[in-house]
Image (tube, rainbow over all chains, first blue to last red; front, top):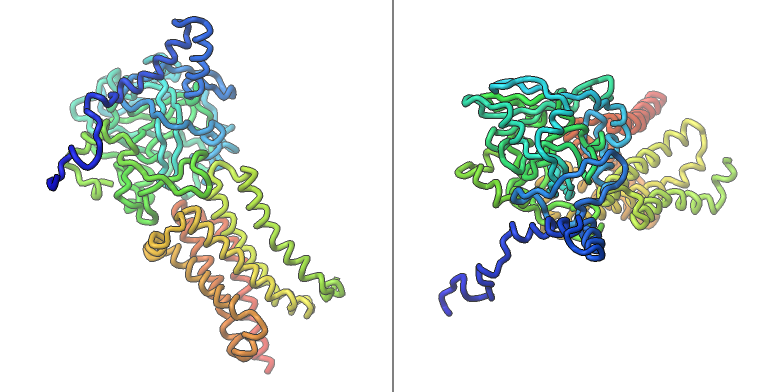
Length: 333
Length: 202
C-alpha cells in the first residue's frame, strides 16, 4: 500500500464496466427509433416526448424545417443541455451586420439567401459553382449537437444540421498539392451594412488545414434546431468546427478555395498576436488580454455561479488530438 | 426652477434619479430582461453608467458658471458620490460575476490586463475622493489641499476613457468611446479655458 498504483486509492470500475461512448450515444438513436413507431403506440408517444426533450426534434417553428438524422460520427452528439433557440439566435457575432451581439438578429434580415451558390476554386480536379439546391442534396442531413466556444469566453450547445464537409471535398477531388482550404463569407455592402467598416478586412476569410477540413466532425452546416439557419447565424450555409473557437466557423459561405500555402484569415490579419491560424480551444493558452481557462455557458450557468472549466479542444480531444501530434500548441495557437 | 434647486428635498429627488439606472439593471437581472448573457450586460451596463455619472458631475461647475446658478454647487458631492457608487458596482460585478470573487485570480487579472489595471486604479482614486468628501475631511485637509486632492477626478476621467478605449480596441469599435471622450474633453477643456481667462483678468 505504500506504493501507489492506479489500482489503489480510489475504487475504480473495471474497464469492461464502462459503457463505451459510442454505445452511450446510441441511446438517442434508440429513442428515436422507438418514437417512429417500432414500439407500441403508447410507448412511442412517451419515447417521442423523451426524444424531443433531448432536442433532437424540438423545432422552434420559426423557419422552414430541415430535419437531420442522428449522426453516428464519434463526438457528434454532446449529452449536455441544449442552449435555448432564443439565445442562440439573438446573441451572435456576425460583424457584417454590426459588432454588438444583438445587431445581427436586428440587421441580417436584408441578407438575400436565394439564389445562392458556392464557388469551389484552386487545387481541385473539379472546380466549379455549386448551387445551394445541389449542396443540400449532396449528402443526407445529420443532426450534430456540438459545444460552441467563443474566443470571448462564453459557450453554447447547438444542434446543427448538415453533413461532414469531407463529403463535398471528396466530390471535388483535391489535387495532391492541396494542403489548406480557405472559406470566404459573402461581402455585399448593399445587404450587409457593416461591410466596409474598418474592424476587419472584408470579405471575411477563414482557413483550415486539409486534414482538419476532412475530419468527420467538421460540418458543412445548413440548419439548426431542425430548421434552416436563421440569417444572423450564417444562412444559408456555414462552417462549424467544434474544437476551434467560434470565429473559425465562417458564415454565409460563397467560396471554398484549396491552396498549397496557409491562407490568410480575417482575425489573424487584424491581430496576429491574439488570433492564430489554428485557434483550437485550449484552456492552457490564454488570449493576450484574457484567460481562456474558463467559460460561461449561456442560459445554463446561473448569474452568480462560477464559470465552468474550458475543456481541451472544447471536449473533442479524443477525436482530434491526433491531428496535432508533436505540434507545440503554444506556438501554433 | 432656481427656487426649487434650493429646496431641501431637491437632493433627495436627485439621489433617487441617480439610483434609477442601478435599479433598472438589478430588476432586469431578476426578471431575465438582460438578454442571453446577463453577467456581461450587468458589467457593461454599470460601466456605461459610471461614465455617464462622471460626465454629469463634471458638468456641474461649467453649468453653474455659464448659467450663473450658484445653487447647482449643492449637488456636487451627491453627484460625485454617485460616480463612486457606479464604479463600485462595476468593480463588484466584474469581481463577482466574471471572477467568482476569487481574490488571488482577481489580483492576477489586474496585474495582467492593462485595461483592468487602469479601471481599478480609477476606482481606487474615486474611493479616496469619496472618503474625503465629508465636511470633517475638508476641514481636516484644509480647503486648498482638499481642492488639490479632488482635482484627481480629472485623472479619473482620463483613465476611464483609456479603460473604455482599450476594452473596445479588440473590436476596433471606437464610436461610443469617441462620444464620451468628446464630452469629457469638452468639460475638461472648458476648465482650462476658464482658468486661463481668470488668470488673464487678474
